[in-house]
Amino acid sequence: LDTTGARKMTAFSENALLLDRRQVLKAGLAAGLAASMPAWASAADPKSIRIRLHGDIQILDPARWLSHPEAEVMDAIYSKLITYQAGSEWKWELDAAESIEEVDATHIKFKLKPGLMWSNDFGEITAEDVKFSYERYKDPKTEASYASDWEALDHVEVIDKYSGVIVLKEPFAPLWTSTLPFSSGTLLCKKAVEGIGGKVNTEVPASYGPYVIKEWTPKQRLILARNPAWQGAAPFYDEVVLLPIPDEKAAEIAYKAGEVECTQVGLSSVPDLQASPPAGSALKLQQSLSYVWLGLNVEHEQFKDERVRKAVSLAFDIDAVLMAAYFGVAQPATGLIPTGLIGHRTKPVPARDVEAAKALLAEAGLGGGFKTTLSIENRTDTLSAAQIIQASLAEVGIEVEIDVQDGGAFWSLGDGASGERSKKLQMTYKEFTGAPDPAWSTQWFTPDQIGIWNWERWNSPEFAELHKQGLVERDSAKREEIYQKMGDLMAASYAYNFTTYPPYAFLFKDTIEAATLPNGWQIFRAFRAKA
Image 1 (cartoon, one colour):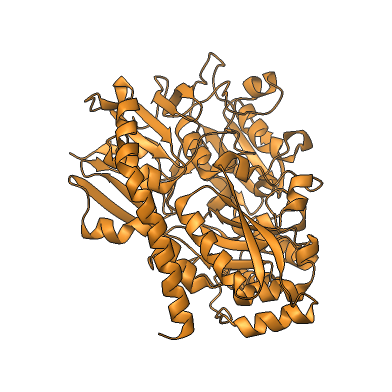
Image 2 (cartoon, helix red, strand yellow):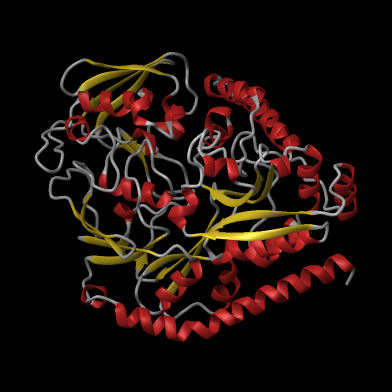
């Protein structure tokens, strides 16, 4: 082996030893899980299913949610005018709407199904609720993280109790892909939400969906029960029991202990599970629209100098991370936008060059190296990646301390443009989920997202202007050109080191039809037992 190959194999072996040490804990942990299982968890009830949730809920507000488990729960308890069907292709269907049509590029007429009732005696869903649900994204008091999903909205005109027109200020290309059928198309009850001050957190005052929240014990379980007022296709299960387990390895142990019947597992487990799946189980690999990257805070003193950021990019060993954290199952990324979407870059990523990285650091006056902190979410695969990043940067004299945060704490690190925590961030390694439109991904990296989701605090007016152009441009070829330029700008900043677009791996009982969207999000309303 050459020195690069030898170093990769050493990192791989060290990671394997770490996993081996975890194996020692498996028997005791599995026994502990089984012993702590409540009575309902082992009951042979064909109308109840136990599913692992990637993390606990924090905000069930479609304008402000933090992570995709919340989007999965919101899909179960709320409705939209239209919604995506579970399956391998992006297809939407009518949900709360009886009809919907594009009158022209800036006017969308809808009519609600009559008789849809909010929970907790808040009455019937009306066009006023639609107006409130969408216009609140424009209200600064909402503090909508997803305000850009309705950036083009002028207003919603109410025609009568059930009918209205969505009026846009200008054409909006993502409306039918990542707004109306996605989370930001969710309907809320005007009277109920206004009654609690205009924001929803974990207590939902009123909802309308196939399920309602029956019980929630923070960090332990969330139970969804059939909504008796639901008029759509009846979900198969009477109850869906969701157990929040952030770490994929722990979730896999929980599955083998019988605590859950469906879980996402880490990609590092895929080779073994493919070779020898647990009895009565099925493994499903599905390409996602997620993207993973090592980000650098360009406002932090350590990374203000472009030469330092470029040195990190040249020292970052993506191949070693893919082997150690994803076991070769995931392919390297070429930029922000995943494969299959408009704007996916095909330009090759510059090869790793340790000597060039050292030279850049010396040129920047840091020939002796420096210390920095890498903040990550507490997940096994993420920790494995962080350890490889730590080792690869050490080769050029950068000493990395790994700061491991539990899910809720990690995703609250972006505390606003003026927030002190977001300013102090140095490096982060994280994964964002995507939607079937490139604008849904580019929106998080505009200047107005600094400190919110733009943790790199990269301020590019040109990127922001191109993002706006991409929203209104309806010609696919022209949109392609726009998003290619945006990808080039991100690459030239050296603030973003994209690693992979990880597929999702689901392990579930072979008696279950596990339902997901094409991006890997679970659709609980479509789960069912096989005939």
